[in-house]
Length: 82
Image (cartoon, rainbow, N blue to C red; front, top):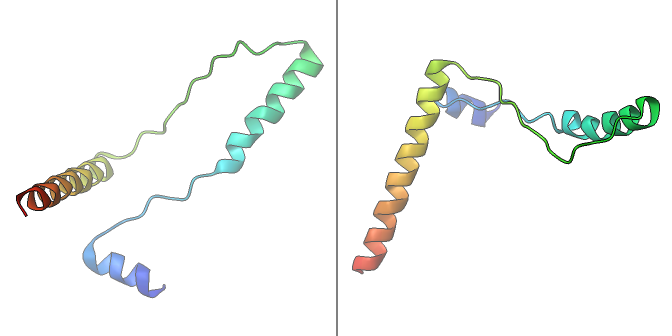
């Protein structure tokens, strides 16, 4: 466990897992395979599915984003007043 992991644990912060971008690039390979092997043509439309997160992780993330937005707004107000 590194220092950053230690500090995150002490401060109660959690990190999301790294994105698996290799899965994204597998889509283009699958598209070519489906087109060449089965004659299927892409429609030009796509969808994205998100894996749901647990309620506690959602609430924690929502709270962090809310605090960040409030801090950003406060910082802008302070700059305008000065």
